[in-house]
Image 1 (cartoon, rainbow, N blue to C red):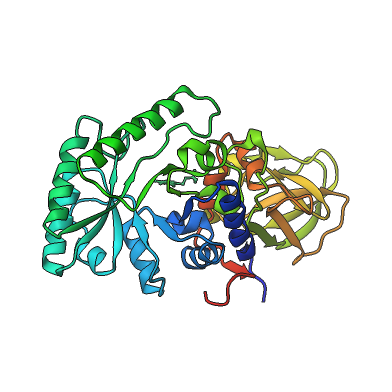
Image 2 (cartoon, rainbow, N blue to C red; image 1 turned 180 degrees about the vertical axis):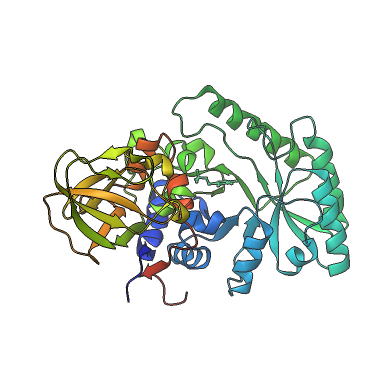
Length: 377
Ligand SMILES: *Cc1c(COP(=O)(O)O)cnc(C)c1O
């Protein structure tokens, strides 16, 4: 049975990418970031493939993602949740032994309350804002957060397992904020340790930092995009990583049309000769960017073709000229690039965005078809 569109996920590529990252990152432990459905690749299968490749921690953004990993039987491995909001079910977080990144006092308080009723300490990573001005405690608020956490630890209500922060500009080589954030993190870690913190892991590096900035690796690195084989720094090439997602579709219809035929909504593309058009059943409802109309390429009948006219909700059109393609034939939207298809990075370049957005936005209507990988999914 064929699907109109499908995302084939090469689980061996994910395992292999973790191995490549570990090799290049020289000994630091790896927390594979599997938030947002593992950047569109599928939360649980991607997590298992990352663990098979040597990751020893998993990271997600939201509590529900962590709970889904536990529900799927991913146990015995620490899972860190990066982003909580007041009133979430922190009792379940404690019961399921999910680690929480804590950058605000309200979360520490909710976790200690949950730990008290659970009769078991909450595992936390104190999060420092070293210059991104997003999550985390500012240097001004850090000492009081650290003191409160250490008091809760002394009372048996939390385990401070990690000290962490996050880079704003590590993908921009030589951005001056990078060295500043690294120095600030070093200071904030030192202050916490002076105050009595004894964390298992100190961690700062995302993919770009892990692969380009050895001093940022500390005990643990947190690669996301590199796990999926996409480069965190396009100007530096692939780092030996292999893209794990290939997006394909089965052609729905092929037909001859005369010169002067306006194609798709708004007629933004008009055929300049008699030609063959093919309808590809993937649209913005599947996560194909509408901004890609007349801009992004796909591989069809052995050649790259730019999408002809506007991307619709469920479909788009390509112009094959006089080349032959039959209904049901495969079109490759993006992939590793081996067969001449565009990569997610190529789409990102054409759309002035990042590869993260291209793979993460592929929608729930597109089935993920897993290839390779560890036996257990
Ligand atoms: C998403 C995320 C990462 C991974 O970033 P990449 O650039 O994809 O490697 C690392 N740390 C945190 C806290 C994140 O939210």
